[in-house]
Length: 203
Image (cartoon, rainbow, N blue to C red; front, side):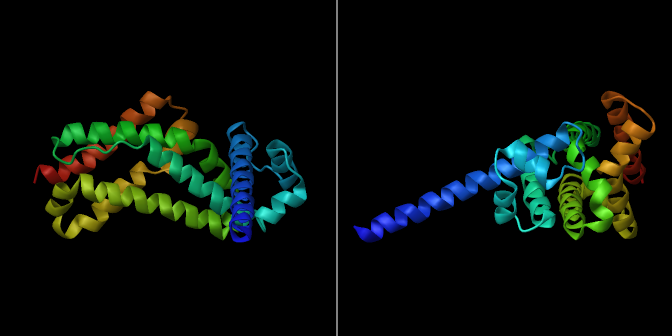
């Protein structure tokens, strides 16, 4: 009986700790989404309804919080992701792919803008970005496998061009550099991705 009680207390503490960590991550991302792109520990703790000491008990520094928040952003992307069939004609694949990329890029825009400010001095934010790149690269390799094979020796260059056109820095340029609306930016992405692939498909 004592063992069961101890296990119950341990499980209870673990559950509370997980809820606290989740609340901290939620507070961090909420502040960022509201425009506070460099929220301090004090503001995050206040938003989460905890003490600053509790914040740093759960996360030893901002880097470990960036890791947890980055994982949550990826989870949100996964929940919103809908696979595009590689069996569709090329034009339909390009359209569906770019529509989805636009939707997901809009989803991560607040956290991406915040990360851009701090990444030069944060190894963890750089690792977070590499995870996003790897996911897009995997998707492009699967969805456009036929065209990448047709590219032959130019495969890697084509793959890199498609990934670059699909990432947040390119989206940021379209949306905030050129001031385009979401639909306009998506149309430019679709034209870029379509042109890169059409060149290969026409050979």
